[in-house]
Amino acid sequence: MAKMINKVRLIKFIRLYPLLAIAILLIAYLLGAFSDQSDPIIDQQYLITALYLFIVVVPVAVIIAFLIIGKSSDNLFKQVKSDEIKFANQDPFNLPKVKMGGYKLALLTNRPPEFTGLTGDTYQADAAALCNLNPNHTPPVAQCECGFYAYKDKGEARFEASINPGAFLIAVDLYGVGFEYERGWRSESQVVKALYLPKRCMRCRVLTPKVFVTTFKLGYGTSSWWQWQVRCGICSSSFKSEDKLSFNQLAQQLKVEIR
Image 1 (tube, rainbow, N blue to C red):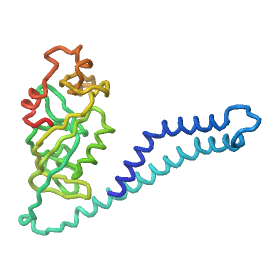
Image 2: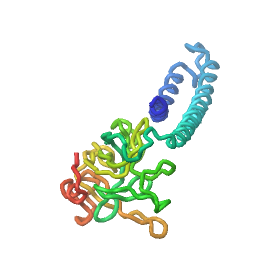
Image 3: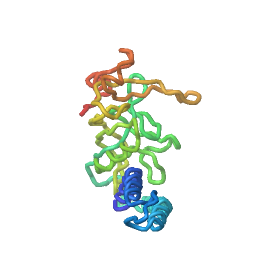
Image 4: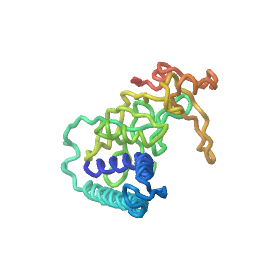
């Protein structure tokens, strides 16, 4: 969890970096870094040197931080994969009963609309997992990545939504055989309880969303699809009525609650 917190902090810093850079340039300008004042507050050479250091040191530090976090994530993934073989319960018919539930991200695609995971797999509101790599697997399998995943913490899933435009935050209950990780679950089946609407239109990012609209996304071969988003009244005005769904209509078609 500490590694994830550091990753979130780093990404937030990168988002603020342009504003920080502008602020530092403005301060340097006010202190006389770009003028020929005879008596500046701080020697111009010092200011120019400090700006060069800022331009070089900060991006290099961010790159190094990303490499360290990425390496730690890889080591953690390898550790989890190796630990999965060491089952805590040797009797598969006497597994402990644990309530599994959490949050995840999903796109809304196709007509009628259905959920599509970030990996591209589509599913209904009530579904059992399938393994696309090995048809003999009944997910989840320890040595495979098949199964339904979910975060335990809503805040962590919400942050992931902020870096995945077009994805919706959904709440799920997980059932059947499952694996518990530090940050979430992997399970055999899943029921989507609710879909959370973003506070802003997915296009202008300013106004309140009023309706779902769908657009056709071109892909290679048979990978083209319809994708649903929420738009405000202005950004949805050019869509035909057959390409729109109200919140209640989409909730009925998906068979989930919309919050």
